[in-house]
Length: 146
Image 1 (tube, rainbow, N blue to C red):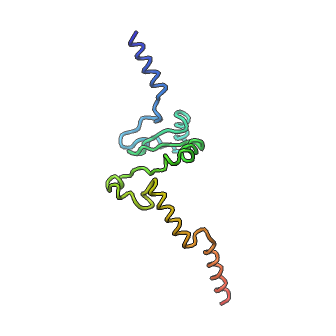
Image 2: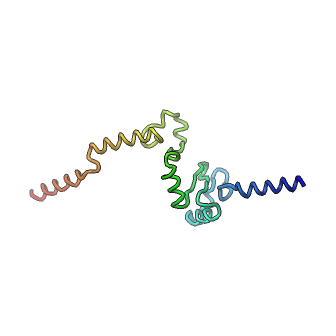
Image 3: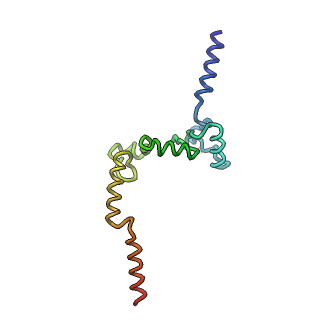
């Protein structure tokens, strides 16, 4: 009786808490071999079997797939502050925390500060204004007169 109860609990737990990975990944390659017949078709099949959000391994990197507009909206708009950090890359892991600088590698608060400063500098050079169009039209006038 205890054996049947234990097996029943195990089956229920596996059913309700099933993995969000659609298939077992291959060692080293991850889920890449499953895409031999096309990326879009395979992702659509996995979306139908696991839901709108699931995870895959591309090589050794774990990747979360958001397979619908609603899932992407929830993740990036509703929970954007939580999910705004970049994943740690091999270069950052080898270089230490001081290498997590610069616009391309920064994330979180550091990235927001650097983005603000970068936009201020670009605006001071005329980004967002029609300065380039004015310069081109001035040069066209000069070359057409001469």
